[in-house]
Each structure stands twice: as structure tokens, then as C-alpha cells.
Image 1 (cartoon, rainbow, N blue to C red):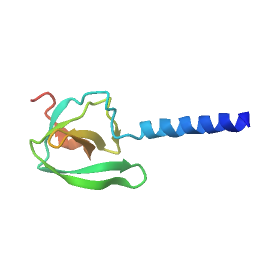
Image 2: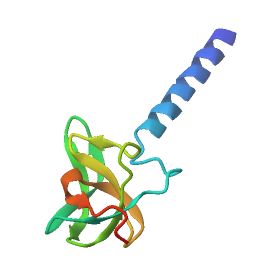
Image 3: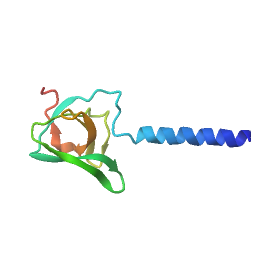
Image 4: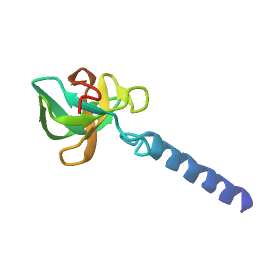
Length: 104
């Protein structure tokens, strides 16, 4: 019985760790101020490495205020974890559409 409890505890810890690693961004790090530099950019709720972005949220436009900290917030196949300062939520947008760091 002791071995079963130990195995269950290890499994629960692994699942919790995987959930944290797959979160859209590290909420403990305040995103660096940036703006959308493309005319328009699709903003998605999630990113899956096998199927790409999913859960379309909205379109962001040139000059919209966003946040992303290079080297801290993840980028998967060109899709960057991004904070939209408009409605204050996290999602994914193409990294080449983020620029103007510290411009506001």
C-alpha cells in the first residue's frame, strides 16, 4: 500500500508540473510593454505543438498595446505568449507582429 501511495503522489506531482509548464506564460513575470507592428494579427487562446494555435479570440491591430518579454515568455514555432493589455488576457500571436518594446 505504501508503494501505491508513493506512486500516486509522484504521478500527481508530474501532472501538476506539466500543467505549469504548459501555461501560456509565466504570470510571475510582468510582460514588457510592446505594440502590434503588423496591420492585423490573429490572437489565439492556446498553442499546441502538434496542431498549432487554437481558440481564436480576436484580431489585434497595428498599435494595440501588448506585452511579451523575450527570453522569458515562451515562443513556439513563431507563436509568442502575449498579454493583451486591452481586455487583460493572455494568448498567442506571431512573434514578428510584436515590436516597439518600451514605446509606451
